[in-house]
Structures are given as C-alpha cells and as structure tokens.
Image 1: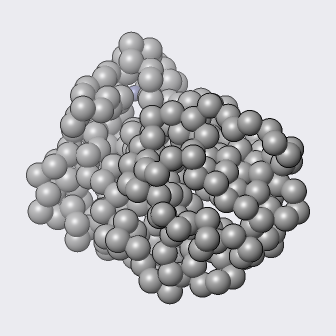
Image 2 (image 1 turned 135 degrees about the vertical axis):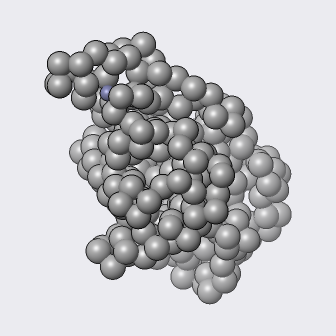
Length: 282
Ligand SMILES: [Zn+2]
C-alpha cells in the first residue's frame, strides 16, 4: 500500500499536470469501490476548474472552483495515470474513473482490488474519513513540538506496541508498514516495545526518525517523477535502499560497521510483518 511519500509524489505529479485545468467530462465505470462513488459525481464536477491539490495522510484532495473537493484514496492497489487524451481510446483494464480536461489531459484511476475511495465533499467541511485522523508527521519546528506532545499524550497509557500504534492513522497520519519499520530502526526502538514504556527522549527520537525517513523518500520520489503519475505500491517505493524492511536473515548493516554480526529478524504484529535488529533496537 502506498504510504505518505508515495501519495505526496503522486499529488505533486497531478498538480504539475492538471492544475488550473477545466474538467470537460467525467466517467465512472462502476458504482462503488471500497465505498460508493457519489451518483451525481459527473454532474457535480463537470465544467469546474481544478484549483488546488493537497494531501492529508494517504488521501489526495482535489479542490475545485465550485467549493467542492474530490477525495481520492488509492487503497491497496490503486494508481493514477495522467496522459494526453486520445478520442475514443478504450478504457484500461480496471480503470474505474476517467476525467478529461478541456486542455486535453486524461486522468485514469485504476484499481484492480477496488479498496480505494473516490468521494466528493463541500470544501469548507471536513469529511468523516478525515475527521478523526491524527496529525501530519511533517512540518516545521513548532509542528515538531506539537507532534511530540501529541504522541506523548496518546502513547502514555497504551499497552499496544509502538509499531502498531504508529501505523494507526488516528494517532499519526500517513505511515504504514514500511516507513514505521524503517523509522523505528533509525530511532533504535524495538517495534515490540509497549508504547506506554517510551520516555520523552525516545519519543523525540521516533519523531525525528519519522521525519528523516519520510523526507528522504519524498526527495527520492520527486527526482524519479515523470510526466505521468504512477504508484503501484512496490514500484512507487522509488529506489530507496531499506535498512530492515524485507531484509529478514540479512546482516544488520549498522551492526557490521561496529564489527558486530546481528541478523535482521521478522515478527508478525496484527497480521503485518515487522523487521528489526534486536541489537540496535531496544
Ligand atoms: Zn543492528
């Protein structure tokens, strides 16, 4: 599943290709994904102008000049492709939504497993899907302090492991399995630690590690971005070399630099694999 850096990259790609364009036509090729697609979506957004793109957690928000916003989530397998529109070109396999602009671009939403979401809401309101979401992990120093206090408050009484807590979108937005594993490795915190046992200093290390990992990933994504928008999970993870994710059985590179040999371990937590080094992470 694409996580914050992939979604941020897709958002920037959409912005580069579609900002200030006018929607000429909209076609929904099915009624429902994970949730129903609004029935009158085409009528509501045709002839409006796309005025901004934002991201909230793993959602992309497409703001229109009629005070409405399109909400998109890519689910497990979704991707979006922007390319020049060719008249009468057949839809792609699993293309559930097509938007064509007056300027001649075609946006296709493709999702084989259909866990994604396409919705529409009034721009001044917060849709239910976003209303209980935790704060964004990235931001300036003031925001960093805010995240720090927010995590301290929410982790204080939690028996749940820190790995599971950080993957919870209600606690902090945008993180999934890969970036949580990598951030905990960088912070030197075991994914198995009970959240309530973390002290202030350890939480600060986690916040800084999350920000470092996400920023690196967004930078890598930005440099590999082309004229189309693409995210199919694995391919969307750019060329970053993970330190622990998917590395079960490999020697920990951090330990090797200290002339120690430790093998990356894998453990399953709430159905998802966590990867870690038990020498580096306590
Ligand atoms: Zn290690």
